[in-house]
Image 1: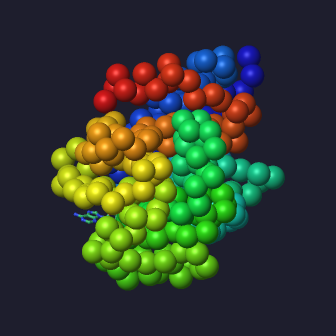
Image 2: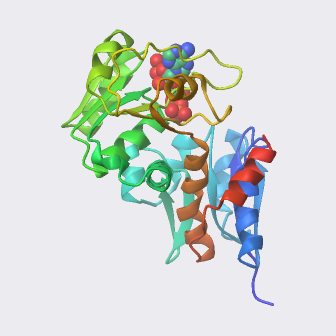
Length: 275
Ligand code: ATR
């Protein structure tokens, strides 16, 4: 029997993470000798946890709240996505060096690619929110050649920081600008926590929206958010956010375990059954 490859997701609180379900499903499916476990770490333990990763036999892991900033500093090298987005969600070793990467943009793009091939012929986007998820979405859209990305945020300064970070083609706006911006945006992305179970609804007046607009949400609980429901009833194409969660796990699994796994309907069902 070969060596068991071990990976983790760590953060606090961590018990709600769906990542163990996803990675353990793939480990079983591909018959790999591996494990993926959820490990609770509070900020005062986190640095030691990362320094001890290798001696504890881990090939890598995912890192989530509240360690997103510290993990960026602790990783010795960053992939281009982590560098541009300014956040790390995946760790791995390469030639003894601890790398930090960000797989959210790939997850966002792959979700849309698999749901609506050719979706990226659209080139004008309206992105709601300016946090970490928004930075990943904007980075992904720039990679696909979107020429106008309008970022709307309650705190406009945050949207402006994001626009400054990404430069040409990215602009910052307040919510009052949304009706105007909807006229000539053909992709609408919600990256705020609005619409999530237990949070305020995302109330939007869709009148005047371009009929070709594709609407997607990074929120996936509930699967059909109020925004997606209203958009669907309006006759717009919609893509839910669960696929982003599943697809962002693909490149991480491949780095640790050496196989590029497939996002299957069965995996989707498995996660839905747990919600
Ligand atoms: P993440 O890293 O997941 O993107 P975040 O950095 O906490 O999370 O960002 C949350 C986003 O949701 C922000 O754009 C936030 O707006 P502010 O920057 O103004 O705080 C947005 N958001 C959360 N609650 C909101 C609300 N009630 N109304 C409007 N925007 C809200």
